[in-house]
Each structure stands twice: as structure tokens, then as C-alpha cells.
Image (cartoon, rainbow, N blue to C red; front, side, top):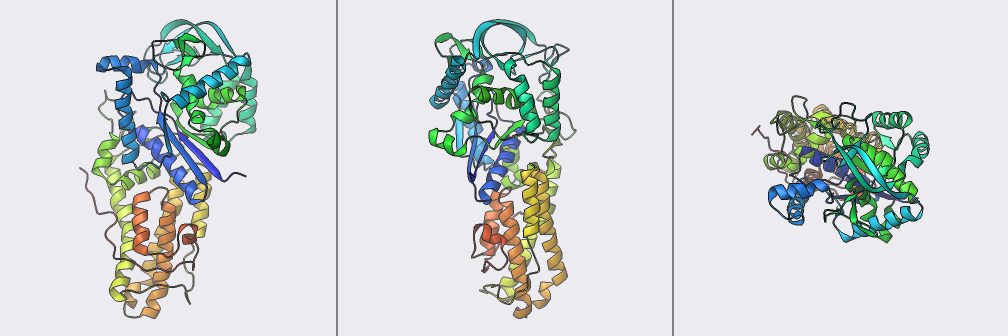
Length: 494
């Protein structure tokens, strides 16, 4: 059995600056990548940009730039977001890269050889922003269900993929694999739509405007961005990596692109005789503080760069992961972010670390805390098991809650044991300190998936002789604490 984990974000459309939803999706995926690294798995984490869309041509014209120049400029901003949010991706794919184009052409030819692509004419209601056609059932009022703008009737000749042939197969696949789409509400939504609507063949090309992946053997057409974009998860891997990591363990996406990832992409892979991804995890939307969808016209947009400039990266990550439900939409409140920093991060976690280390260093400088003769009074393993169960169910906010229960219990342990009363009695103080150092090291180890910067510092302050999973084992380490500084200095709303 492979001890690997391959996780992907959706690839972002670089026609403007990243918004907070882009940051949220990357942070969520990053937490699962880091968590699986903690479990000892060989992880590959992919993100990137979707650069072949028709509307990029229009956006570049509006900006007075060549399309490639416009795209290159915006892609750097998305890469910078990854850096600022401390995203640990292994690869950043751009769909204008040769490796991607080559894979798209290879897959197209394979489907064509099997008689699954044909030339024809299409007429339907189209949204340029989505670069997608919508049926009457999907848009009964004639407006795009995502952008709420009137759809335009579009008639084109081009190439089609015989998606309709896979309706029974995809329904059977979903019924046999109820965890293929999580959370469950999204799974039911897709299954219901498949059982009540007929799948139609899919338009997979558009007339060429000199931008996009060319259709093999016909330079008059390029592949529709939704056809080529999905292939990025496969095209990013070289042959050795495909052998090692494919199929993907987890595609992390927003609910607005669920249909493409849970129906069209599996059918494309099935048609090409390729293994299917194991799961599509659908996160919710980050809403404004008033519960409304963020939009420039309403003036309620939150800029992730601004938040990352004003507050510590780990604070932003913690708030996004813990306070937005893993299974639904969630509101973003800057005041709430500040409050969580000052109470949970600074008080619960940061002060816990400071209290015991400072007391020990002041009372017994240069003391090395060993497990000899120390009774175990703190056990981190049950908290780890609970956190792991929640991560396996894609409920990262509940996993953090489970780890935080350990921090709360450690604070209670310190209050009950009152180590300050033993600051002149090393024999009484040392066992309390050892249990605290073990518990803090174990909590910090688990929290590395969510708070990578501060936990690294915390573990340096604790001075454990053990690394990795040994941090979870009571008695596996000695502790040589180092003088600490505040992990989370108090912040104010700015």
C-alpha cells in the first residue's frame, strides 16, 4: 500500500488579484498536506493558475497589455499569496506550460482514437465569466447561477466529448463510493442532479483567438478552458510522479466548480482509462461579516494581503481554519480574528508555554528534565486520535478543537498543580514540569499542520531531545527549556 498523499487546490484564474477565498482554499489544503507529512507520508501538494481562458484575452485588452504579459504579471501575485500565507506546495503549475499542453494533447488524442470526440454544432446559453454553457434546468431564469448576469445565446461549431455515454457509470460510481464527494450535502446534490437530468455531450473546443491549447490537427480551434484546466492535476506529474502519486487523494475546490470536478473530470479519466481521484472535498464560501457574499459593488471585500500585513500569518491561518466550518460557508470578522488571537492563541497557548518555562528557568536554571521517576499525568494520544479522525473526515476545524482540548487540560493541570508553590523544591517541581513540557510539545507537534511558524518556535523553547512522532510518546524525550519570548504579543484592531 502506498504511503503517499497527493492533494491539489483548484487552479486560480489570474484575471485579477487573489481574494480571500483563494487564500482560504490554499490554507485548508496546506493544513491537510502538512498533517499527512506529520503522519509520515510522502506528500505532493499542487496549486497553480488556469491561464487559457477566453476572458483573459478580454481582460488583457482592457488593461492595455499583451495577453501573456497580463497573465505573467498576475500570476506573480498569486505566487506571492502562497509565500505570504506560508503555503507548503511542492509545485505550482501554469496551464500555459509545455508539460500541460503535451498532456492535454495526449489525452485528447486518446479520446479521439476511442471515438469519444466528434465534430458538430452547438447552441446554448453561455456565461463568459464561467466560460461555461448552462441548461434551462440549471438556469431557469436565463441568468448565470454563479454571476447572476443574463446568459447569452451562443452558437458554435466545434468538438464534443461523448459525456452522455457515462451517465449510468458515474451514478454507479458515486453510489459505490459515497465518500467520493464530501461533505455529504454536496454528494447528495450531485447524485440528485445526475438522477434527474440527462447528461449532454460536452462542448470541449472554441474558435481560436491565438490563445489556448490547440486542438490536435486543427489550428482553428483551441480546447475549452474547462476541458484543459482539469487535466492540470495529471499533467503536473512527470512519469515517475504519476506512478508514485496518481490518483490524487484529495481535490480541494469551491462549490461553484463542483460539477466539473465530480462529474466531468471523472468521466474524462474513465474514458481515458486512467484511475480516478479518491475524493473531491468541497469547502464553503468566506462571507462578509454581515453574512452576505463579498463583492466590490457592496464594498465588503476582505483583501488577504491586507490581513497578512496587519496580523501574524499563523493568526490569520488559525482563524480561517478554526472559525469557518469545514462543511459550510462562514463569516469573516476582523474583530473576531483579533479576539481569537488575544484569547486563544496568546492566553491559552502562548501563556501556557511562558508560565512553566519561565518559572523553571528562574527557579532551576540549566535544569534538564528527564522522565526518570516521573508518573504520567498527561496523555496526548487520545487527543491525537480524535484529531486524526476529524482530519480523515475532512473536518479540520473540529481537529483543531480536539487539539485545543489538550491545551485547555494543560492549563487546568497547571492551575491544579500550582507549580509556583514548588519553586524551591526541585523534586516536587520537576515531575509537574516534565508532564507540562511533554503535553506542550505534543500539542505543538499536532498544531504544526495549522500553525507552522509559532509551533516551530515553541518546540525550540521547550527544548525536546525527541523529534517527529516521538514527541507524542511520554518518556521518549528529555527537555532543556530555553528562554522564551511571547509567541503571540497582543494585537489590536487596526
